[in-house]
Length: 358
Image (cartoon, rainbow, N blue to C red; front, side, top):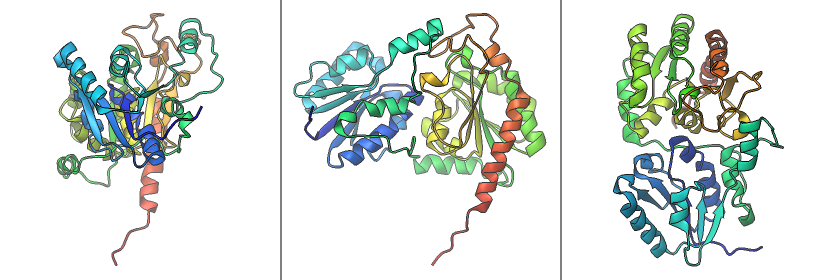
């Protein structure tokens, strides 16, 4: 079926950090395919910084969840008045359906959540995935009928220069001869968190074997994990969890030689900034589509467990009460892998030719 070339496009992805960042390849290829079209984006207010500087977007439409149903209705009225001819719903929940329902003259595109395959894999262990398609590619496939394809360039993020300057000033005292390793020990669900004492052991090993400085990152809730680590590690450690805006967090991650992380939004942020990631995955697996994107990203997981995946998003406790998917991943495994990744990173930086003026 042929579709007219759209002039006004709306993309809906309300939350969260990782899911929003996974839309950035779609926005890039969409803008490239329709360079004259107006592309707007619907997002929750608290995540707006993630898209504020994106050059592929014309306008952000903000949903302030504190305004409740009234705010949702007002946003829907604004969308109806705008006259979009293509609406891409890559959130697919009640709110996104409400916002795009019954829009006059609009073609609606949605992506496949592969819910039947996901249910069977998580609940019964039956794997019907014929291929592993990362989520950002599933988003793009929603627009195949418009001739849009993935360009293979991965995620992207655009840091505000002011945030970049602030982080640069806060790190000015440290020597660039020492590698800077970011550690993000938090996660949205308990079963996605590698034990905090293991992160502490990794940090000690990096300081001992690689003379690394450690940057602890996360949200305010993660300070319960990072504060004891910072106290135990002493000098050469920056505990910035819960103190940075999203833009400042991006600038901090961009300063790192390596990020060691659970499955979190910061993991995806590092991928968007081309910072190598060593990610720890427990209850979820590659088929679900959220592994880090990029050639410099690596995943460590307990692949031998038949009970994986036990969840799509994670949970508050292990259904088997043994938590082997995380507990059997040992700090020594990560330390060896992190050491090799640091050597590659630092080696590639020293091999870059110096630029001269002229």
